[in-house]
Length: 247
Image (tube, rainbow, N blue to C red; front, side, top):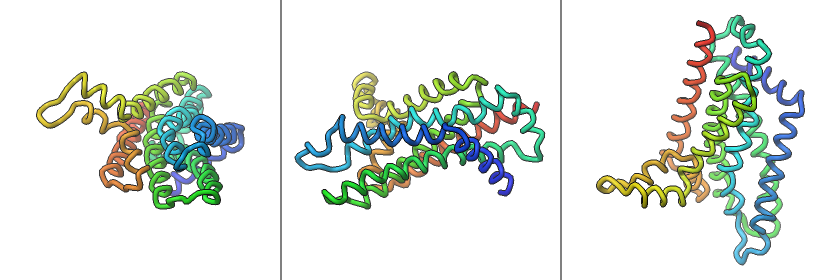
């Protein structure tokens, strides 16, 4: 645990000792607020609620999180410090977990700062705080998946831009396949097998479909298992690629 915390502190310091974390947090909060207040004007709705605020989370996170994770391993490879890191008295999985937690910490801080939206609106309309809680829980869950995915993508190349594009593409696909229009399209295109609709089956693997359950105020154990399982899957991939550097 001490080794993981050492890596965690190292990576968090790297984020906040440079403009990266600050730029990310400001842009993330600004864009979500812009989409909610301008693209879907809250105050012009006949029955104002926060539904349109949370509907953007899987998509915005799928683009912004890779910007945080792209440097985790790519920068180590580019600068050559990965070889030095591998000589430390640490297990590869400890480094993987420490870097993952640092990336997730930056995202958690960003999500926490978006709370100013429901807190501000609570003075002008009624807020269902139970739904707010489950929505943020769902956002943190899919963020965990995206951070693990982005961290793995960062091991593939020393080029941060290439890592960014790979992670965005994969994260965007994961969000897209669970969206209702895509699920409907796949159902119409592929039909089904018995009572199982192919589109619904594919859509189950999409982050958007699980996040929508949480945004309705539901804590679905299946969604929790989904998020945990995919996070572990990508962390295991990450560890395998890092272990390969030792061979």
